[in-house]
Length: 388
Ligand SMILES: Cc1cc2nc3c(=O)[nH]c(=O)nc-3n(C[C@H](O)[C@H](O)[C@H](O)COP(=O)(O)OP(=O)(O)OC[C@H]3O[C@@H](n4cnc5c(N)ncnc54)[C@H](O)[C@@H]3O)c2cc1C
Figure 1: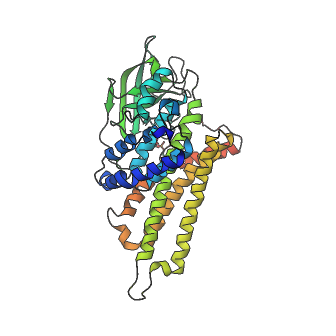
Figure 2: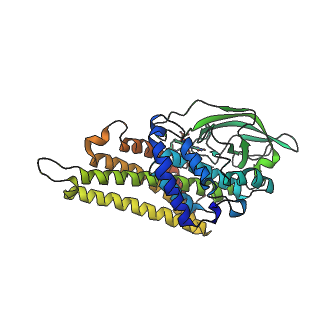
Figure 3: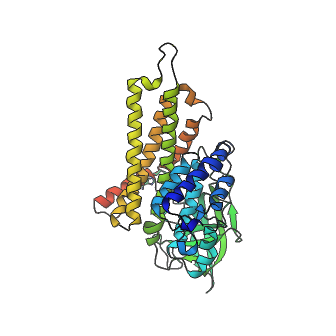
């Protein structure tokens, strides 16, 4: 059973699923902008949807390090699949953080059993990359029910998940812009209105759709955590898991670009000289630099997530910087690989074309690169991290 597996066995299982089902489906996911149904179902079948579900609930009981490694592996063949899987795991972690008995039965156990897919609906058209300032309202309708009113954008797994972890302002009427709650909304609640299909430049299989919540009613039991938890969720759960899922995914993209160009440098031989590109000193030097860039980013991500899993407060800055650094790493490495691979990489739908388009989302996915460096600077200079 999956929950008896140790981390090595889990990562082996991720790798096996990636090299078979996810790899086979990857070209179609990108070219036809198709949500990675087969890959996600295979991950669920293999128990991997329960990666961060506690073992007591039938899950694998893993944390940030395992999430980074899983998303990295999947990201080497399909960044869309890695992100869809990652967002499911982030949503799961938010549910698990303070789950009630009812939430364990209704969400965590089915997630671990591969019968329930969840995801994160944080971003809003009004506040964009400032996802920690939701404007969606959570209104106490009666003793038993909340009413949710607002709009979300870029909901990965949109229309495909069984539930959505939706961020809202605190509970009205006393909520302010700085308050933050999370609530689970099941897919069949009435009042959920989906926007059109996702047509992305990259991450084309994500089904990142917009969602309007038209006075959606949910039972009060769907509130995650307690009133007053507020920003605790952002910094203790949402941000570390969200950042880690993305860090792993974009690291996978960088590694895939390197593997692709390394092979090209070894295979491509010029007739006039009889030499392969791998024999040219300048290209050897540039390949070395690429490897070093990926490796130092990988070490930062692994270090940050291991610290966080140990509950070390010193993990905050490494976790923030890991996603900012991996965004630069992925975009730079794919760009450079494009140059080193020559004209052949410039073909429509070459592997590097796909990676370039996928990598480009790294800087704009919240928390964006600019915001992350700003937060780091504020923390280092003893300033409040969030702007008012
Ligand atoms: C493929 C994809 C998948 C996504 N999946 C999800 C998901 O599953 N769930 C989810 O909730 N969201 C998701 N998002 C949304 C994402 O996380 C961001 O919220 C969204 O891309 C922000 O876009 P925006 O245009 O509103 O940014 P804006 O807020 O308009 O920002 C535009 C630019 O200005 C910069 N900027 C803005 N304010 C500041 C500031 N104060 N200081 C410095 N720079 C600033 C930003 O860094 C950014 O570069 C996804 C996005 C993409 C592209």
